[in-house]
Image 1 (cartoon, one colour):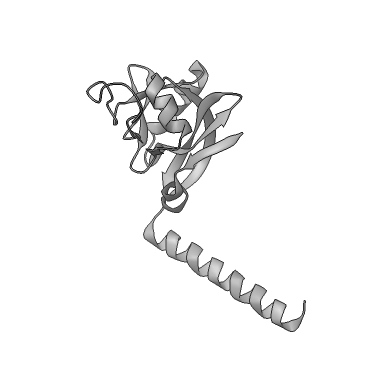
Image 2: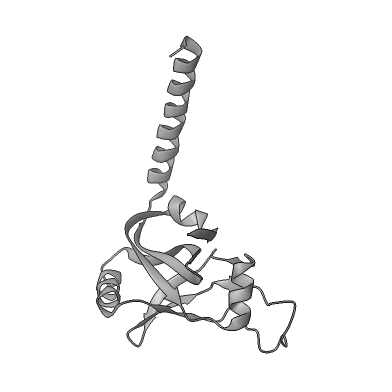
Length: 150
C-alpha cells in the first residue's frame, strides 16, 4: 500500500469513530493526476445521493500532458464504491446528530486507487486545547527523563 495523500485536518478537527475503504470511479486523466499526487482532500466531504456515496470538494488538478481543459472538471463529484451494507450503515449513522463522513487518505493498493473514509464526530475547541496540553506535558516528561539519564 502506497499512500498518495492524507487529510491532516481530519485528525485535528474530528474524532474518528469507524473507518472504511472505498474505490472511486475516476476518469483516465484523474488517475494520472492522482498517481502523480496532484490532488487535495482539504475541504472535501462525503455524502449520499440516491442511495450512493459521493465525494464532493476533492480537487484533482487537470492533467497537463493531454486532453482538452474543457473536458477536465477539477471539482467533479466522484462516486465511491462500497458494499451495500456499508452504505446503509453510513447513511443511517450520518443522520444521527453530530456525525459526518470525511475522507482520510488516498492510496494505491495493487494498482487500484482507494480512498479511506471515516465516520467521525466533530471536536469542540476545548477538546483540541486539551489534546495539545496533554501532548506538551508528555514531551516535557520525556525530555526531563532523558536529561536524568533514563
